[in-house]
Length: 400
Ligand code: F3S
Image (tube, rainbow, N blue to C red):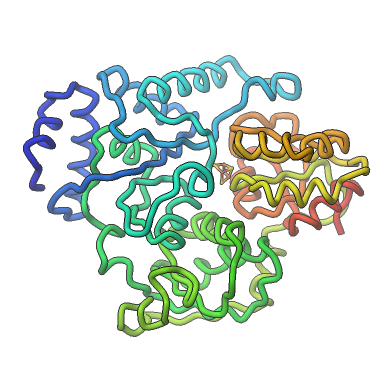
């Protein structure tokens, strides 16, 4: 790769060992993808994970003196204070969590601990060059905002934040943003959870490529958030287009950049229904309801509060969200309503963190296929329903 004088100095260690490691990783990634040079970024988001390898890498950069040029927002972790009364945590997990927090603080990250930064505090303009990791964030950036990012790992996004650069390849280039597969949506998308099922279903039918959806009108931000999250649970979709909705798909022709689709698939109501059934555990008694994968918005929290007001939940109800949304929920009285019903709103945490030991081996309801998929390794099983249906199940203690 051709590096600028400053980039070469970063690589040679003039800015310290941590920066040199970050640049070395980026040069290797760039060469693997045939990038000719680096470009500057103006935003980043790091999907930190509280796992050993992630911690090892972050500490390696910190110990080498690295500081972020572009402060990234970060993914959820584990809210130690909230969970101390409801679950146990091993000393090893606790140590990893505390060290991860310390490392990301030291490197200069913005400690947002949310997986939906693109809805709250890290919002790009059209065409902005960025480096985002996290399943729903990457497609939202590319598709909904028309910003540009590759599907970064936590490590490559952190390197970009440290150097302020990313290799110029992939979805940063016009040609790779072209639609490849025409996905004709004949299914009726009644609510945001149907966008989740569409997102889970589409990669199974189309395989790899950039999907161009037709038949979708006026999706909500939550619907688009769900669509991106599930496209990257069942598949690997850095970018999609929705004709007439997303900014690089004003027409079908624009979405395909004047070329013909390589493939065409149709998604029907029956496809969504069959997928929901295949992912769901059997109906009947449930122990809990889990929401917030991705983190719920204030509108979704309001919806749940409205439904549980004056009721007493028969099953545990957990909502994961950002600290901003939790604060808003508190100001607007939703926290009190949900707490009085017996539910919980937790900030900074994620369904895929080791904070749910008391739910292992139990059955829940959720609106998120990603939640159901990721928690299999924690021996949790789920019935998939829309948010209102899940809340109704938590009120009754069973799901039909
Ligand atoms: Fe967010 Fe964790 Fe789900 S990062 S999308 S809550 S697996």
